Length: 305
Ligand SMILES: Cc1cc2nc3c(=O)[nH]c(=O)nc-3n(C[C@H](O)[C@H](O)[C@H](O)COP(=O)(O)OP(=O)(O)OC[C@H]3O[C@@H](n4cnc5c(N)ncnc54)[C@H](O)[C@@H]3O)c2cc1C
Image (cartoon, rainbow, N blue to C red; front, side, top):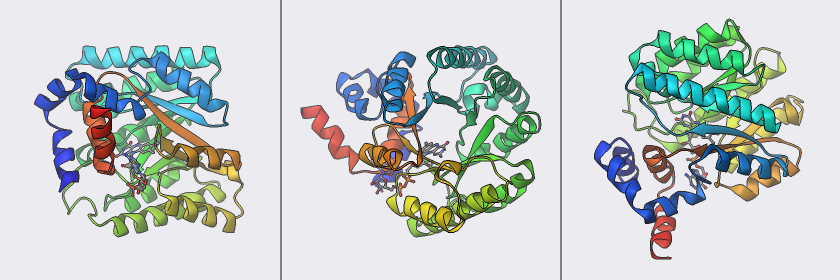
C-alpha cells in the first residue's frame, strides 16, 4: 500500500512543486543524489573511478512540454558529452525519451537522440525505459537509431509481461541492453505484481542476455539490480557459459549497496553506478522510496537529525 502511495505521489504535480521547496526534503535526498549540478555528479564519478567503478550520469526530469525544452535538454547533454571527454572519465550518459520530447512525437525525439549518438564519438548513449505507455515508441526509436549506430543501448523492464518477446524481437539488431526490474506503477495486465514472478523473469532474461553475449548476438549486457540473488544467479550463469568477467556488467544506483558495488569492482567484475543530478528530482525520489519503503525511516531521521 505504501509503495502505491509513493508511486501515486511520484505523479502528483502539486506535490512535485511544493515538497522540494522544503530544505529538510532536499537534505534527505543527499544519500541518493550527490548534488543538483553536473559538476557534483562528475566529482563523484571521479571518486568512484578510483575504486574501478564506472559511471552513467543522468539529469533528472521527464515529460517536457515543448520542442524548445527538448532542444535545451539535447544541448545540455551535448555539453555533458564534451565535459566527460575533456575530463577523460569512464562515464556514459542515460536519457529519458520523454526528456527528448517523446510526448510530442517519435520523430523529434529520435532526431535528438541521433544527434547525441553521433556526438558521443563511439561512447555508449543509454535510453531509459519509462512507463509502459512509452515502450512501443521507445523501442521504435531505439531500432531506428541502432540500425545506423552501434553506440546506443536501451533499458528493458523484467516486470512487463511483454519483455521476453521484446528481447527476442530486438535480437537480430545485436542490441546492448540494460536489464532492470521496473520502477513504475503498472496495471496487472501489463506488469507482474508478485516479486517472485518478477525475479523469475529477471533470471530468465539475464540468461538470454548472457547466452546471446556468448554467441556474439548481444552487446555488453548490463544487469542493473541491487538484489544479491539476481547478482549471484548472473555470475553463476556466466561462469557456466565461461563468459569472462568483463563480458557483462553490473549496475546500481548511487548510494545504494555501496559496499557491494566496491566488492564487485574489487573482484574484477564490471561495475557501473548511475549518478543522477538536477533539480527535477521529486518523481524520481518517490520511486526510490517506493522501491524500499524502509527508506522512509532514513528520511525521518534526516528530518529530525
Ligand atoms: C543502473 C540502473 C538503471 C535503472 N534504469 C531504470 C529505467 O530506465 N527504467 C526503470 O523502470 N527502472 C530503472 N531502474 C530501477 C529498477 O527498475 C528498480 O526499480 C530498482 O533497481 C530496484 O530493483 P532491484 O533490482 O534493485 O530489486 P528489488 O527487489 O527492488 O530490491 C532488492 C534489494 O535491493 C535493495 N534496494 C533496492 N532498491 C533500493 C532502494 N531504493 N533503496 C535502498 N535499497 C534498495 C534492497 O536491499 C532490496 O531488498 C534502474 C536501476 C538501476 C540500478
